[in-house]
Image 1 (tube, rainbow, N blue to C red):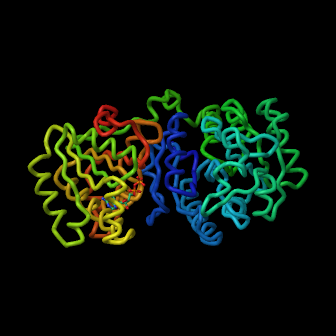
Image 2 (cartoon, protein in one colour; image 1 turned 30 degrees about the horizontal axis):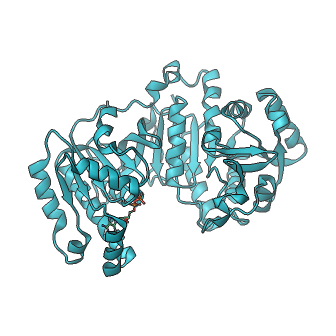
Image 3 (cartoon, protein in one colour; image 1 turned 90 degrees about the vertical axis):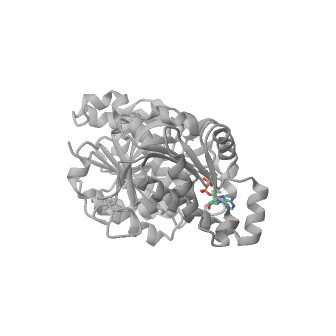
Length: 443
Ligand code: ADP
């Protein structure tokens, strides 16, 4: 079966959020980190229903965001997807210049379509839309913390006005009076807006039921744009057409990963409060190696020592490598080394340790920290992640997809990256026993 839904996400964690949502809705999903350098190759996607290409285009210049998004679309078009999806933040993070509007219009033009929706609603996380106004919990968007966002301050909650500033086409509203009548009425309203010459509909939504009805009304839309919530309603369209197999309707199958053996390790470069606690809990009962940034600055061969230590300690139980420290320690390290240098020294070291561990036979690896995960994934030559079972909200096990035909000798190439289960945990996610309990969720 071919890839049904081709998605473009404007940042990495947004991509993971969407991928997790699609898996929960029964679609077998792969997340790719950036636009692959090699063309689409169907043999790698035979059992994949949805592909999410995660970009970093939320706060780049509109022209860069458009170029990157079009490159992602062109790659996905090689897979001949049934529908395309542009995912942005549920708080509609953007400025009067973009990037949501310009990217959406460029994608519409490339897909030769003249109508789409813009619906960032995600009621489960308190993002609802009523009369075109976006609420964050009980507050209007412009009265929420988003008004002070350092890069994309949101000073207007009315999405019709916000999007209209960013696009040349006309923006309309499908309001709640229509939405509550269900999918047929919504689809009919989209048709009327289109007849009036509107290119976009902001769509009210206050519950998951609304998202499901809106999803059904988007069955024939080439391009859908929104947060991850609206993705909830799309799989049903494929199911009704017999394109999504009954097996994947059984939602436990969509997140099945191939069983991966190998040794187990945790690498932690996150200093967030939740991770500090998780590291303490694991240290209390497991072998742990501390990566000291000050030794790194003195050019001590910490990677060498860590891997020698690993060779002695890797066995039946997971082991831990951590740079995680309290805010006071981090501040004093940063005062000595500089904020950026301390960060990148630690990231590079942990990434080199990860590479060494995989060569030593680690096949199940947890990495804590967003930036740390980015560095590890790069060092290992991972180009994508197949999304598996969720350990805690927002953190699934994944199966690493190697870069294809990669010539980069600093990372493991496709021929040498052994099967690897990866859990990439952002700082504040996960319960305090996360590093101990995660293994039981693996097949
Ligand atoms: P999070 O997801 O918690 O924000 P990140 O990995 O994104 O975690 O960021 C943590 C940053 O802190 C990384 O750049 C990492 O290299 C750095 N870091 C980790 N440990 C230390 C330390 N002991 N001193 C200084 N910086 C550190």
